[in-house]
Length: 307
Image (tube, rainbow, N blue to C red):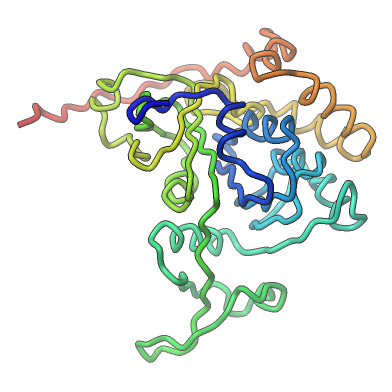
């Protein structure tokens, strides 16, 4: 990989940047959740990871079911719109397949941690923990006196993951990344992470990126690697490329209630498949076609000529 061309495949990216014991973030708020990265981490049998994320979702339920993680830093966990994450519950309640340590925040608390990490600040202040039980459950949430004389205020420590995977619509080979839709904290975690892998539906020419500069949420200068992985966020969605596979979320709720069924699914859909392309072929064109997003185009914008 040269200094300008950062393209690599997912197995290379995971092998190179995810070490045992790493703190890993796979972000995306409902959308842009990079299941392709999670499955490759499982496939390579990484160990003792600390996983951090707003709303752990199915992606971390699968990783924890595979035994790759020993700790979860999060805000709210559940199968969105469905119910519990049964694999995480088994790990916490029964230690299966291994015990799991929890470190819980509110959504804004996690956002604040990423913002502090991205800005290299010692902490992030927020008022929303007053009256909450979370400070009693999490000793990392602390209170300090405001230097402006308006009483105590809660603070949370910075979060700088060793590596983050951010999924987006498109990027050029240098890592300049266009992202639109429900962006969540993709930008914040990208700047907070020590190493950043961008995973995209399309690799485009630099000219396309330059023609729409305000859509470039992530500049190439902070990107370590770019992975081209179409449908890499399935069963979540990518705005304008494919919709959420709601059927999968319902299916996971049923099969993940049983450890043996979960392990059988991991074997069939992760360990026995060499890559994402094979996963998509197994999923089938008919199912993928049902996720077509339709069309609603943005209006053209005139940025004017460059001086």
